Every structure is written in C-alpha cells, then in structure tokens.
Image 1 (cartoon, protein in one colour):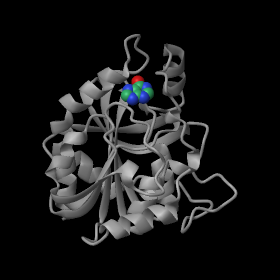
Image 2 (tube, helix red, strand yellow; image 1 turned 90 degrees about the horizontal axis):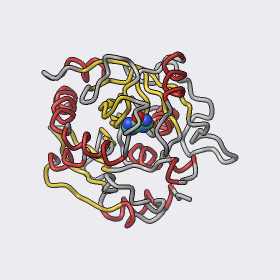
Image 3 (cartoon, protein in one colour; image 1 turned 135 degrees about the vertical axis):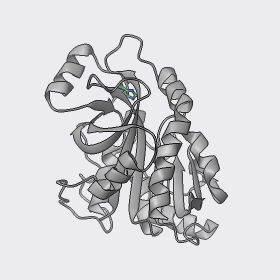
Image 4 (cartoon, helix red, strand yellow; image 1 turned 60 degrees about the vertical axis):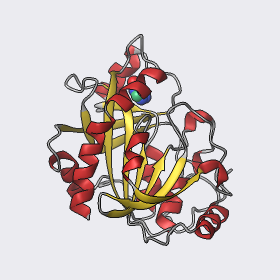
Length: 267
Ligand code: HPA
C-alpha cells in the first residue's frame, strides 16, 4: 500500500515543491518524450520515493517524476501512473495526484491512450475529455479511512473544467475532438459486444486509467482537464499493448503541441 505521509515527506526532502509547481501533468502510455521539454528538471524514479507503491514496470510507463518549468509553467510531470490492472489497491491509484496537490498544484492535466468507440475517433485522433463513465468497478475514495484533505462525497457534475477543455481544443493548430471517456479495469481489451454496450451507454472512447486520478483530484478541489490519444479502434482483434505504446510515441509530437497550447495559456 502507498503511504501518502511518507511519500510527501520524502519528496520534500529531495527538494520537490521548491519551484512552487502549479500544474501536474500525468503522461499516458508512450508519451514520455514530452518530459524532455521540462527545463532543468529535478527528477526521481517512483521506486525511489518512500511510500510510493512499487511500480509494476509495465512497458511504456517509465515511472519518473520531474519538477521544473514546462512551457512557461512551474509543473510536476508524472511519466507513468499506477493502474488498477496492475493489481494496485484502488486507494493507491491517486497517489500521484495526492502528492501533486500537497506540493501546491491546483490543476491536473491527465493524458491517456484510448480505444476509439465513436466512428470519427480513428487512430491518431485526439479527444479532449468532457466527462467520464466509471466502469472500473472501484473507487479510490472508498474505504474506512478518509483520504487526507479530500471530500468524502465529491460532486462530479463538472469534473472536467470547461475553460481548460476549451484551451485543449482551441489552443493549438491540432484538431481536437471532444467526448466521453469510459474507464474500464482492463487488462484485456474489450470484446466487440462490450464496445457496443459502452457506445450505447454514452462512451466515445475507452481506456484503463485516468478515472481514479480525476476522482481524487476533484475530491481535493483541483481543476482538471484530460486529453485522450486514440490509438486503435476499440474491440479490434489485433488490439495490443505494444500497438498502444507505438501509437503513443508516433503521435507524441501532436499530443505535445496540444499540451503546449494549453500550458502557454496558463503561463
Ligand atoms: N481499450 C482499453 N484501453 C485502451 C484501448 C482500448 O481499446 N486502447 C488504448 N487503451
């Protein structure tokens, strides 16, 4: 299990928080390159942070945290996240968000790779997340002990900030669609029948992350926006994690351009 108090104490010891980071960015599968944009980062590996859960070592998730100035904004960049499909306890899935909030971040930007459900969301498309459906069957806030500083019953009516979402959509030359993200447990990809069920239930894209982080961020009162890179048409018989990672790195420059537009507006 994660230990938030130990993690935050350890990060402060190493010097995290000194640049007064305002925005936390969590990078999805294969987007690691974007981290090189951080000027003069303070950097550590998740496995060296006392109190962090042991990273599972899933391909494409480098599990490094950097603090520095990203496109003009003092930021924390999480390259890698904890997934429920790796066997982590649901209460640990928001640990990156918890430490970001404690280190001063008021805004969370989440990115992920997702399978396209809506017909126009073909591989290589970008989608700003306007809302989500939690099909993961878990919730990071459920448990006997209340998460420190978090609301017990947070409202999720406006989980994704409209102003930040507009900056994702209009802040760069890239074309960015909007849509609803369905979070599923994984680790298997969806059957065609599951994809059809998700479509009828209102989902435009599907992925195995993000929802727990957004729930924790909203419970802590952070502003949130999210960007999905569509890496495949959901429900295909050749869906693979390797394909997701490759599509992530092939499209990282596009993702970076959209994020740059957002960050420059926040600078
Ligand atoms: N399903 C679930 N998660 C994903 C997918 C998908 O098709 N593609 C990338 N992450």
